[in-house]
Amino acid sequence: MSKAAIPQSEQEMMNARLEQARRQLLQSEKLAAIGQLAAGVAHEINNPVGYVYSNLQSLESYLTDLFRLTDAVDSADSLDSLKAIKQNIDYEFVRHDLKDLLAESREGIERVKTIISAMKDFSHIEEEEFKPADIQRGIESTLNVVNNELKYKAEVTREFGDLPPVECIISQINQVVMNLLVNAAHAIDDFGEIRIRTREAGDTVIIEIEDTGRGISQDNINRIFEPFFTTKPIGKGTGLGLSLSFNIIEKHNGRIDVESALGKGTCFRIALPAKQPRAPEDS
Amino acid sequence: MIKIQLVDDEPNILSSLRRLLKPQGWEVHTYDNVESALGGLLEHNYAVIVSDYQMPTADGVTYLQFAKQRQPDAMRLVLSAHGDRTSMIKAINQAEVYRYLSKPWNDYEVVATIKSAIDLYQLKVENRQLQNEVDTQKAMLRAREQELLRLEAENPGITRVQRDADGSVLISNND
Image 1 (cartoon, rainbow over the protein chains, first blue to last red):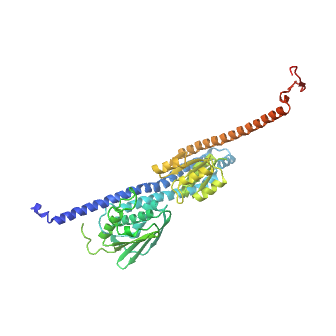
Image 2: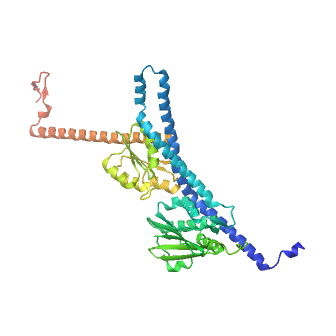
């Protein structure tokens, strides 16, 4: 009985298999992207860890000096010998520097914390359902994750409008934004600008990512959403980023458009409905 | 006074290194961008230059290559959070760095490396000084020798005059 129920039609089976393959592709592209980012993230974390760690050792030597002074309060025979010790440990410097040392170390730890939580926000691998989400927060997390890829290539400016919560799979939207940001940075030869704009237009939310990079030629612009199409050297790009971005946005019932001028730059525009039409299709 | 130059785009790194190196009594100059670090090269002679690898306007290898032309004696070190093969190869082959240190660093290792770099720097400088001394002495000797030859040519035998202990000229019977 149950056997007869399964093969409803060949086409449905094929569709299911296609959908499964597409999801696997999405997942592997995401892992590849994270792998590419890992080196950058390590750099971002190694810097603060480097100075916080070194500061802790300096702190230890300051404290040893200070304890020498406080211990001497009991044993010293005169005030002058205490003063001599105070002079000797460069008390004024230590006192002044301790404040900076702690403030800088705290800042370093904050940075590590931000990066780690951004990575967590960014991945959300387990989440696969449509939920109202804060797009701007997603963009900020993504920026934190890719900061290392961007900061040596471009100044990032944000022009954020007021956005309603958007019903979406935020980890997938983050992935699209990451693709566009990394592409924007790769398109810039020396140092340029990347502008991120968001605004509400009726029932939809618009995200624009514009760069001042090389631009895309007319020949290529029709092919950028094709799977495996890439102009990057082998090993630099999989050619899947934009095609998967296109799929993700399509699945969200949104649109992704591109405008580009050679030598001037490129602007990608994503339009997403704030609310998904009825129940999002099962897949 | 031994001068050390530190270049890193991150000010917090510079201040923690400053703390680390302070007890050593070296004169430590810190720069958070390549342009002002280049300015520093014009004003001071450094024993050791420590540079970050990845910086906004120019990478550390490019900077150190420039520093090598300006101050060939200064020992060059890279301190980088970016320990990939390509950057290391570039640092070694192009900037001819003395050591490639990675972030997060080990305090002891950084201090010990700078110390041994300073030793080498001082050896180089001392070597150059001794070489100069030898050269001037050689030049002096040559001048003196030539003067003697000239005198001998003008007045044969004058350079071979023998004197007694009281300074009087001795005339031998052989001539």
